[in-house]
Image 1: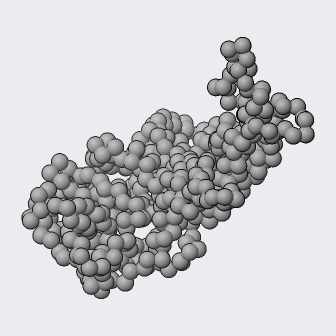
Image 2: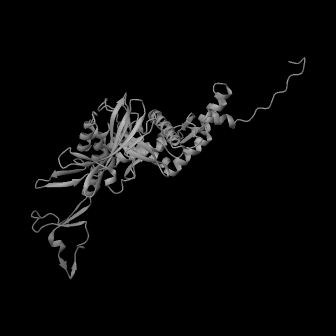
Image 3: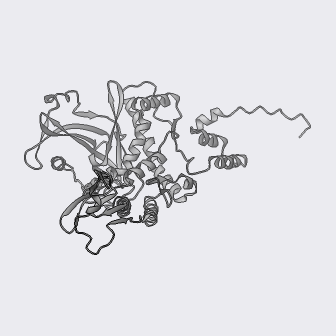
Length: 464
């Protein structure tokens, strides 16, 4: 976090908790796959310090991408009971490509611990901003729920560093205001000056203060459903691999060693210098053939053969076994159970064959879906609220919102359908509840799908 921003927020009487900043930077490095001090390192070879770069399986990227695809993919859906509101939301999602963006941000959420969705109104309609934890500053929170927030980005204007700052402030009457500020970074550490937007090209149209008159939070915070064991008092979330960094180091160390086995273990033929001499106008050995290594002169005083083959064995089984053990431990610590990854084809691949049998992964996904479902519902309600505030006709805020997730990877869909139909026949669940689950819609819409039952004829008199 920029020290000038910290000073500005402290001047506004906010108490800033910076306990997660270092960890977020570490998670960012592992997500990128290049961790300073680990992947770049030095080794003493007896004469000099040699700079080396450790190879990586890029597990920080892989686990985040795989979890995002499991949590939110093309089979997930959001259904709204009011057709007009449903069409309004679908249009916003299509224009902003929100389905794709939500999947991208599920990946970033897994990497940084937290993301925030910020819809805003423009002359062209509602647009969306997405901010990760590295550019978020919680201002007030209760029971882990962020009530006020600062998001920021740094930019250079006329060769000078500026911080574009957005504050979401909860007023005493329970409504929200949005403040947009531009801070010019001072020459002294922590120094800053507020700059008028009209003084800078490209910022003239930004409204300094937006009074929403709404009690609905103008941002939606999304985080993984993992307890913060670094600082329980900080409302920011945890990366999916936050507690698996040691095993990631182990895996990359083994992988780099495995790679070096092939580099260092290449076949060599050590050849005495006299064997490399040119005879009859032709070289005895091809000087461009890398398998041959010429020894210095007088290197064979004991009279041993002047051509000797060196063929080092590769410790393939040991490295593969260590990688498999490491991958099992890694996926288990990330909540996806053992055997989620397997080492094949030179890298870590998702072991799709075992997913349906992986109970730990099923429970983990269901746990994360609890939070994600609430996030998506809150996002839809915020979009409806923005539409109503900007005079979109006919919008109804009192609607039923249903979120369906793709469970086909982790459960047998056909068996689940058969089981639920049996429950309908037994009278344990209502037919409309089954249809709503089956087709990802609301119960109100499901009732419309049900066929009208024919009227039963009245029994004739005297007949039972």
